[in-house]
Length: 260
Image: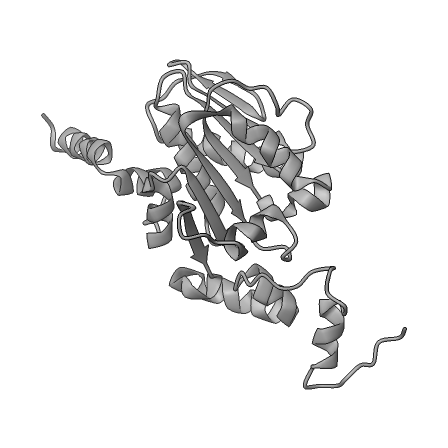
């Protein structure tokens, strides 16, 4: 066997045996520890509070690709808007090019493999979300923003969770958006026996993002930075004073008295 062929064979064997090697190959770089944790967990419910640009779409797509290797499996990806659903579907499609899976049907939001496995990405406003049978993997992306789009995030989630198979997994993933939503309560209302695997990822804790984080620190307001990069669950519209008023009133440059 030529050396190049042997090298490819060994690399393929490593990916077959090592989940971290598969993840690195599919996302195109050495994964962060939290991405490996999210990719390999066997928990049935995973809540991921992840800062912007930290790589959550990549790991969610990789988890979907992993599921597509199981014949006849069905993965549903839900996002608040159609644009967000298409982003994760596109990332899944790009990662599939690094596998041996054969796509037999492809649209902007649905992929079907030759082994019968499917992944469908849908906006949460779609009437077609409910009713899918035997979903083995359910991904709810930007979960904290469902309430703003739907008005009733708990109703939507209660409607899709019953579609999961008995041993299926659900990923709730998002940057924070206040404290009055289902996603926030996954972290605020922790119970000792709830068995939810919680992962919290601050952009400031990821060395490879150092330059990007500093750029966002300069660009975003202090409140936005705390929420979207440091993933703090700050008070939302239920607070007596809006966060922007508090931020301006406590600025070192000047204090602002809000007009009533």
